[in-house]
Image (cartoon, rainbow, N blue to C red; front, side, top):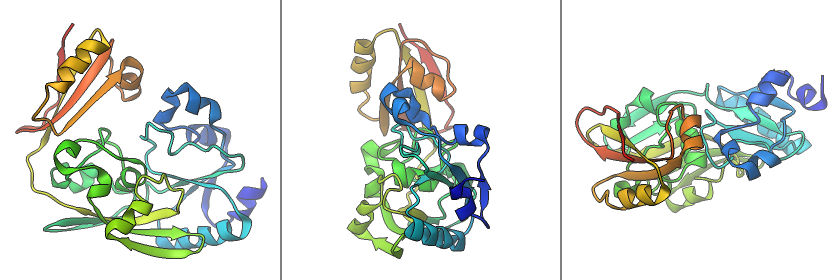
Length: 264
C-alpha cells in the first residue's frame, strides 16, 4: 500500500492500475500537448458527503497532497488530468442532490443535468447528457445558451467550496474566483445557478469537408444559442462518427431531437 493510500484510510479509495489509468484522463487528451503532460495519480478517492470533503481537506492541509477535482471527466481542456506525481483524483460524481426555486437551482456537484431537466438551465455544456453540474461550474465556460444568456460564470449565483484553510461561501462576483478554476482553489460542494423557463434545446450537427465551409456556415447562425466547430477526432471522442468538420448548433425549438445533416 503506497503512502497516499495509507493517508487516505477510512475513505473509499482505489489504486489499481486500471482505475488509475482511467482517471488520469479526460477529453483533454485529444490535445497531444496535454496528453504528453498527464501523470498517473497515486489514488482515486470517491466522496459522497460534505464531511468526507472536510476530512480530506485536513489531510491535504497537513500533508500537502495534490488533488484533482473531477465530475464525469468530459472537460476538453485537461481540467481533470493529473499533472503532478503523487496526485489524488477526487471523484465527486456520487455527491448528488438538488432543489429548485422559481429563479434558481441549488445542487450538489455530482448531480447531472438530465436529472434536473435541461430546460431550466440558461447555459449547458455540449456534454450535458453525461456531465455534472459541479464539473461544468469548475471547468466549463461557454455552451448551449451562452450566446443568449452568457457564459457559466454569468449564471452562477453562489458557490460553496472547501479549501485547505476551511469552508467558504462565495456570492455574486466572488464566485469568479472558483468558476472555471478547475478545482485549483478547492473542492466545490454546492452551486446555485440562475434558472430560466425555456423550450427544449434542439441540437443540429452538420458535417463539412473543409474548415472554410464549416466557418462560413457557423457565422450565419444568427439565431443560435450556441455554435461550435469540432474536428473528426473530437466528434469521435464524443461518440459520434463523422468525417471532416462538424458544426454543432444549439437552438431553442420544440421537440428537442438531435438532427444530423450531411453537407459537402
